[in-house]
Length: 143
View 1 (cartoon, rainbow, N blue to C red):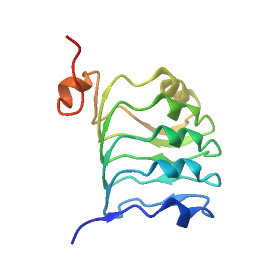
View 2: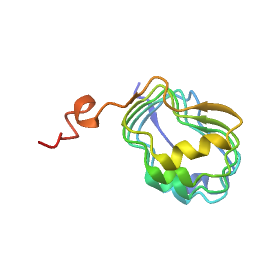
View 3: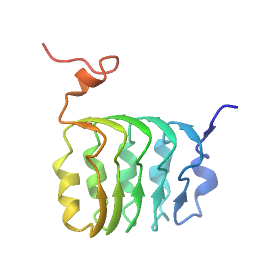
View 4: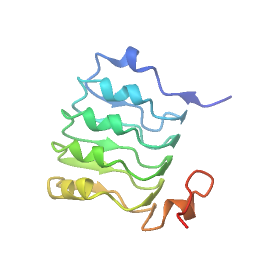
């Protein structure tokens, strides 16, 4: 059986948190998830087989104060600097064990001061390596 896709954002509009950890989901994170304005208590999609990039739109979930968990997926490319807008997150900021590359944006690194526990961003990723080297099929190294 094929793994399930994440539910359509329109069916989640009333939720205050996204509870899809270890749900066997694949596919991409819908950009529409950035419109879920009630999300406050967690965006948890860790431990799945999600691929593609982290939507910049997730930076609009500015009520989030805990548990931004995208760890243990197949997410690639650079982390968008827009994630740095999630300034209220106090614990569990987890992006480890994906295939991120490039540099961690400064906008995200400064959030580590406010995250008291569960800051896991760089472990098990390809940060520090050029995306064009780790993802040559989608990124081209400048000559």
